[in-house]
Image 1 (tube, rainbow, N blue to C red):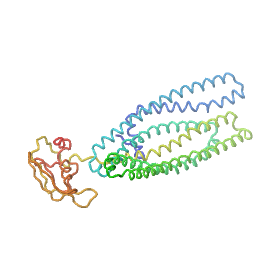
Image 2 (image 1 turned 90 degrees about the vertical axis):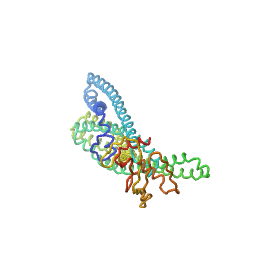
Image 3 (image 1 turned 90 degrees about the horizontal axis):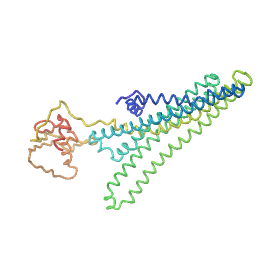
Image 4 (image 1 turned 120 degrees about the horizontal axis):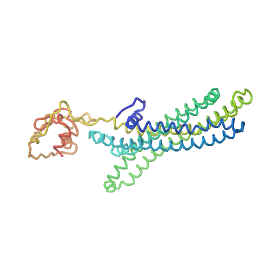
Length: 420
């Protein structure tokens, strides 16, 4: 998987998968540029409409403008359709590949991972959070299209009058500051919500799988109350995120309104007093600014959605960061013979979260055909012995051999086939 050099690791992973479909990506970029360009056509034609048609009474130009708008609309609709189809194909394909890769990676993780992580939380990452990582693709594509349209309209504004353009964009840094401020909070609350969702999923899975025990001990009311508490936390974090998102749009709306008022005031002065621009220039400029409003608003909203999705994606990345089982320690030994002898030689073992050995100085020699029973109280290490033999865990000290060969030097697939 190709990893690109972006600051956020989740975006790196998504873009790495996207690189596999660079032909589709190039097609999406070209179609997006085409669709965005056609969406901006009215900003160019409005000048001609005012100066040549309304003021100049040019009837032929009027028909050309009508035809141009119609042609631009047809091209925009067709290119936007194929752009969305292509981007959705890439997004859904990547989502599927990520799920397969995550599942494959989980299958190769050591047993210790599943002992320290709740199954329900892992399932939540595999299902809900992987979908969020795939959703990032759709959001990124949408943001790219909106950004293109904003860029093209900005170019038009500078073509008409660069001073007027600078006046209209003077409050843009304030919008960026507002967005950045709320972005951090959205990501923070989004991460908390996804962690809580994982806990809810884990609790649900554990509860339903142990329903016989719960009913036998009459713990139904306790379990329901616990579930209410967990879902209350999930609701509160979702509500916090919703409130933050709801604040961004109206604040930017007010700032944008001031931008338009500044343009109208300065533009009116340029027409009526300085006479540096025509009425068509001002209408063209205002049209470009008006057309920019919705894509800019959608761009901000998509950024909020992206920040909301990234914490889920980060949880998926945590699984990718987990190291798979070590296949072979040291030099690999080919082992194709039938097992005749199993030996434990001075084996010591302790769990990762413990400082005390659960097994110490274990010596055992079992020949083929012999039957061995392990007897002892709960927690004395009986299951751990079997887990060490199957290489679900690895010894801290000492060694386990089969036919005189250290099991750590045998490929896992080859070794476990002897037990299968």
